[in-house]
Image (tube, rainbow, N blue to C red; front, side, top):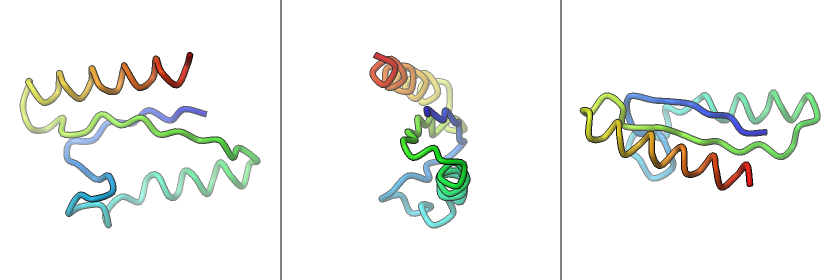
Length: 70
């Protein structure tokens, strides 16, 4: 399963805000409960930091989706 999400800031591991990421843990647990064990997260982060960051984040997310879908 591929879960695609967007965020205004950065919440991935290593970020000062990583402790505030409740989304991926809950979704992983929920899908595991349903029997889905192979879950990949694609994130478009930094979307609140201007158009250039939005463009880069969306391009990176699209590239990651193409890699996972291949």
